[in-house]
Image (cartoon, rainbow, N blue to C red; front, top):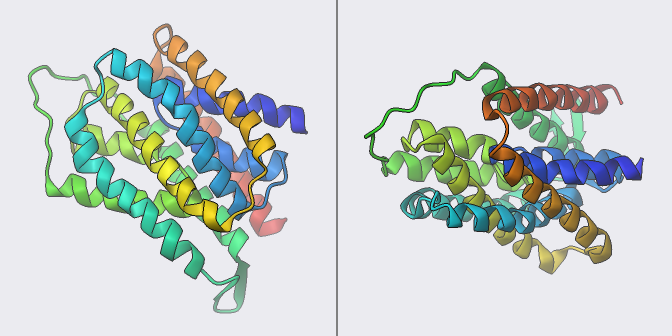
Length: 261
């Protein structure tokens, strides 16, 4: 099964390079189900893999002048604060066993079910989302709503070790009024910074298998470079919907495995 995991690691990067999201949605399940990494440790590894591999995408987008710096400050900084709070305070405070009436869940199962829920929301937004034609002359919006959404997004994705592109991009397009290409570029920049901040916060209390982690990072980086190239050649709309169906299936598999496994 490990060779499938290594192939999937390349797909993690390709997803980020193509549509600016989806890398972390793949990373945690790949680590848990193909490499048998503990779910809590997988969230830490995911932050590192997505954070470092995204740098290649960031450099490419900066060269194309697609990164909106003001959006990164208004949305990205609160998002980074949310990740820090989630990893430092919220995640450690979750008990080893959670009780919901007569039902009990381990911390690992709770994380995977919470992650699967975010995957389901992400998948439905990609599948059902309407493709609006971008209008010229619309200026970006930088308001308090974007700040609050950034904080909430960072907190949620910090808990599950996700980059959060599937939440960031819709927020930047709908609330920030950014064109899709700028939203994707800014999303990758934010994902890279906040993922690395979250990973660094975990280092003090986590034992890392650096050899394994570096291999996954290299494969994901190869993937994101490939994704950047394919992004210029392929229909992003069809790819996004196709990826949405893939994520939907994966989320259902995790739900079934956690509930009946």
